[in-house]
Image (cartoon, rainbow, N blue to C red; front, side):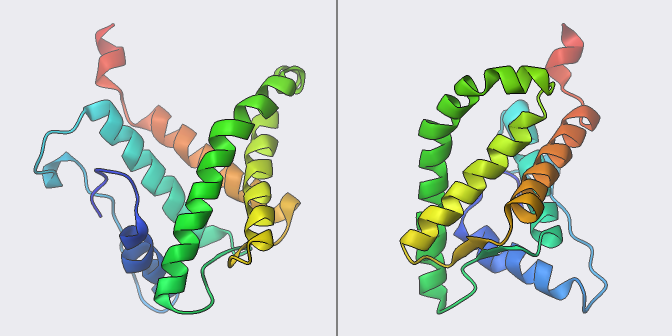
Length: 173
């Protein structure tokens, strides 16, 4: 899967969902292609961020069994569910998350930033709650096991990859 552009429904239905399913039945090797597979110029920093995002998503999807998305019904229903859940999650992260971060700033400072994991998990759980009200097939089973674990996996993987993958712009300064 090329790391250019944003993740879309084709990545989820065509690749990621199937890869998670077959990893236990076959010996698999999955990869995220790098610059050698890109046919158009990409800003290196943006491409690096997309690679890290895709890797963190792969790992979270494979590890967290308590996050369910679009597992019931037809493919069309799954696509609609994913698009609506992505819209809800985007709105929550754009509108509500900055307010929650501002109000919880003392806790963030006191915990040296660890409270951000709780905030990220809370945004995921809030998305799950709103999806339930709208009768969408997106659900996070448990806050303290699934939502926090999902947020933790994505945060840790992204942090590790940002530390490992060098940023050429920083080395020039």
